[in-house]
Image 1 (cartoon, rainbow, N blue to C red):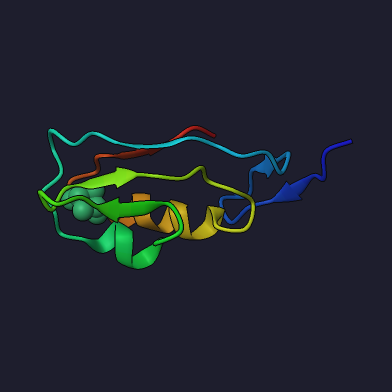
Image 2: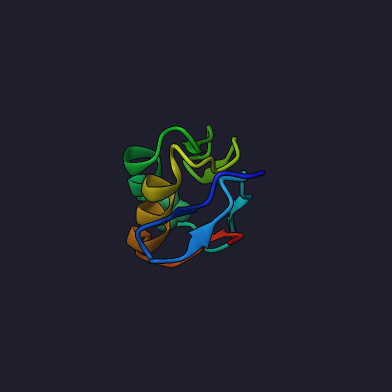
Length: 79
Ligand code: F3S
């Protein structure tokens, strides 16, 4: 039975991993996502972000903060 929990948006999640993705065509390389949630986001050698790991229950709040802080809103997280 998955562990039910409520995240900061008030949604009930099942404690399962979620997929994060970056629309790199719009990323301006500000680096906030990798600063806020280095467990999921990194910048590559071109200075553009990509998601290199899944969003887990442990880093979910940071990943959501990163998504919401991106100045060009190119991060999505499957919820
Ligand atoms: Fe790019 Fe947004 Fe991260 S601009 S570096 S995806 S915060």
